[in-house]
Length: 348
Image (cartoon, rainbow, N blue to C red):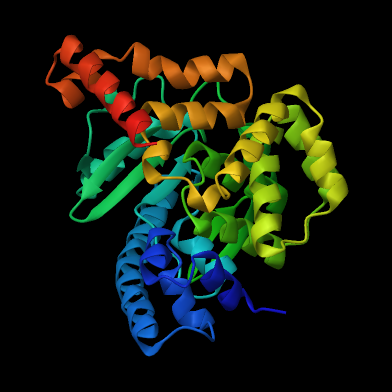
């Protein structure tokens, strides 16, 4: 049986460029696929060093902010990120990431915002840009930070936030004590979050595999909550593809249960269409961005109301959004969106 490193290396076609594109180059440095050349291994090592250096900065920032929020009596939960890498990959240098994500209760947002400003963070985008959204974005030097009060945009499928807070447990990693979701909630959240990002990289499926590898799951509870929260579509998609690609041990009965509700059917249709293109790893990057990316995500959501909420920001942008993206001109904004959509369709 192939090792995980050999399997991942084969899935990216034994091409270093694709390994970087799918965010697994640093991971392959540790997994050491047998058929990689010395040149390949040199590239993996370089990716690992860069990831480790960046993640050490993320770790320092995360540790400091958790202490600041604790002193202010703000409940905070890191999402994904450096502590996830430490818990499930056992090496913070193998999983690249782009920012720090922190979840707080909505009633603590204003205080959390003031504390971030006091810590030297500035608004990366005006907060008004994120009207009807679920996070604000900040920057300090090279560090991006997302301050969440929800997990997904309003109207889209998401695990129950009150349940996530109630069932969170204290964990310890990298000298940091922090709140972490229960395994069932974490698996659902990762699948839903990656569906929101359109599952752009092989690493997304490896994340799901790592949760399954390191966490005993109550599958009955997992399925019940996915059906209740109407997250079955993206969860089925993520687990089904992860099982196909990485032989993840997902029980067939779980996939059958998740595939039954109406809102999961479009995910099934989407996967069949993608398989005709060679599978999700062969989807062009441009399909996953802009208007076509929203449509892609809409299939995973599988509900008319969610589709409307995903398309609405493109069709009815806020003034702040237009000001940032098109210098205040609504006609220019719509022209840019239409041109982008036509370019994506033409390339496809």
